[in-house]
Image 1 (spheres, helix red, strand yellow):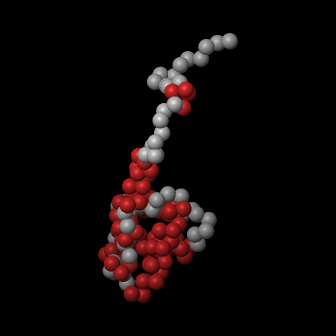
Image 2: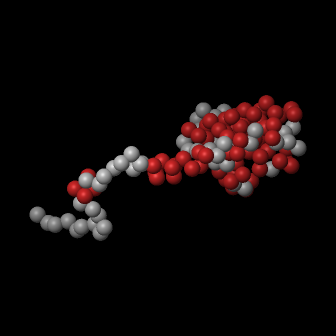
Length: 124
C-alpha cells in the first residue's frame, strides 16, 4: 500500500468535526450572499413612471421590466441595469434571451426596457 501525499494546510477530519458551531456560524456566508439583495427593485430596475417613456410604449415597457425582474432572477440575481453600459448589454442580452419560455415579443419588451434605462434618448 502506498502513502498518499498530504494536502498542505488541510485539517484532519476530526479537527473539522469538533469545530464549535454557534448560532452565528452561517451569518458571514448568508450576509455576503444577500448584500446585493439589499437594493430595492426600484434601484435594480427603475419603474417606467420614473423614466421618460413614450406614452404608446408604456404597457410593453412595464411588461419588459416585469419579465426582466422575474425571468432574470430564476438563475441569478437581476443586476442593477445601470451596472452595465449599453455596449455591455448588447453582449449580455443575446446570451440571456435563450430562455425557452421567452417569446420574441417578450425579448423585444425586455430589450426595449433595458434600452430605455441605458439609452433614454434613443426611444424618445
